Image (cartoon, rainbow, N blue to C red; front, top):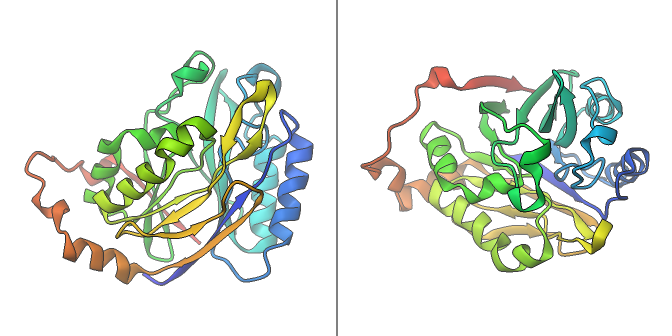
Length: 271
């Protein structure tokens, strides 16, 4: 593995306005001056965390997914974020991973946020994908997935060293739990945890917490973008993964854990 430079983009989204939000992210990405290997956008970055899927969900050939593909090719950088997708007559909160060659890899959110009625609109994902970028094994999750630690334990046992969690945490839960949960997932797995987030106030007065975060395997916060629009940037080092797991070798001492068979994962090489 080699060092990776990661950039998280945080902005105050325009509620349910795909064109305006893509323009916002165009400007944010253009403002990135230094080379970066991976750009990660928040959950439902093109619409805000809306349940209006009948009007807003797009096919995989829609504006937001097409924009992701084109931007990754144009910038020669892998770009990912979650969008509202219609597929096979069902709606999904889908993370789309756009490679520099234009190939797309997807992950559908497993744990839907019942307090917002997400499970009434969207279909929960049933599978997990393992990505590879410059030698790093990466597991993608989305927002509420963060609260289910067994997922993270199993992925670390399967060899992942990098977790990404695009999110739209509310201010209320974010103030209480966001930093704690992200740092805990990093510490218990010995992984980097990379979490871009929405910020600002949305329809109906819903406030999102922001604080896009990059947490290291020992639990320290490498970057925190605060509550305003902006970027969070950090270089991640594979040696830190090995060091954290050597200092606290809990992954090798888990007596109750049964590792998943490798065949259950879909391993994809990402340029």
